[in-house]
Amino acid sequence: MYFLDRPNPKRGTENDLKMFEAKNGYPLIVLVHKDDENISFYGRVGILENLNVKEKVFLKNHFQNEMNKIKDKTPEHIYNALIRDTLTENQTHKK
Image (cartoon, rainbow, N blue to C red; front, side, top):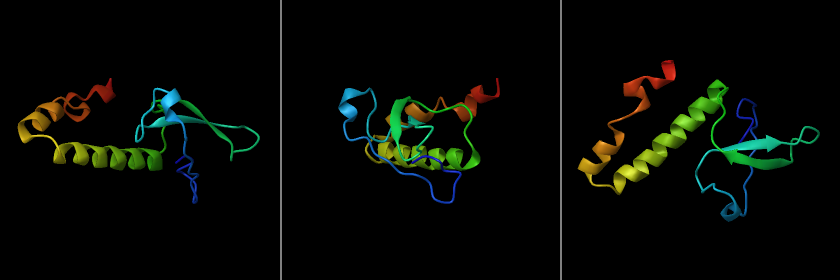
């Protein structure tokens, strides 16, 4: 999904992710054609630094859902070790 700040966000899929480093469920940077926003291209795996509020909420929910999936299939002691070092605890985003 992209243009999350609009009343009707755009939704698109990439049918052949095997040729890219992306995997299903990973956030991608989508490049949109400047003359026709219905045409979009795979940019790269990642997240832009200038996200709007709706994009941040969408990603937070997406990441939480992915973490819940991992938690469900990971032994508790291993999962707890994985989440111990988090951005929230380290506050690295405030540098």
